Image 1 (cartoon, helix red, strand yellow):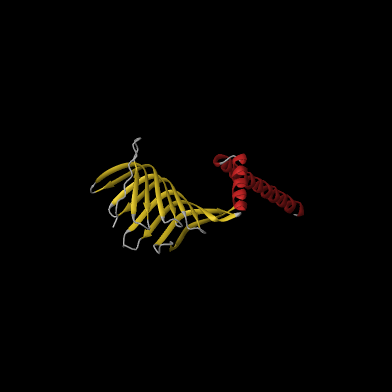
Image 2 (image 1 turned 90 degrees about the vertical axis):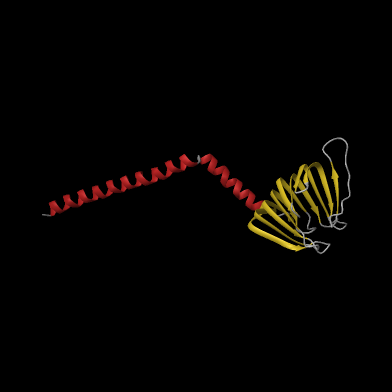
Length: 201
């Protein structure tokens, strides 16, 4: 009787150990294989190091919004889906997927959209880059770069500037919009530069 119980326990123990081995090799190997299929261990290591390094050097923000008044008393709101600033230079904010609205005293609104922007939270200056689209008083604009200087009350739009309006269309190298004086200077694409002062009022 005792001998029979021993045999049964030995068989049960053997089956238990065998079951544990099957579970271990089934799940552990499967997880390793899945990791290898998605990213190699070397790539995973590089990604981890990059995240750690970026985290040490900069702060990352999501869905941020800055608002305020410029020196001329015009209100603005700047929104970004993702942004970061370096810890050693907190006032410079690098933004992605940017939307900016400038509300002028004459009740007009300038909307600017871009893939990237750099905002200086101290001077309130902002530079827009990559696929810039803007809307102002029924006109649509596209360009490669736009720089807004709060201290100078100036907006410079450059790089393959195209404007479409109900009155027609225009292609230029550069637009210089003086917010204080409400004037616009235009530089053309050809060698003969055209400078014009247009009263926006």
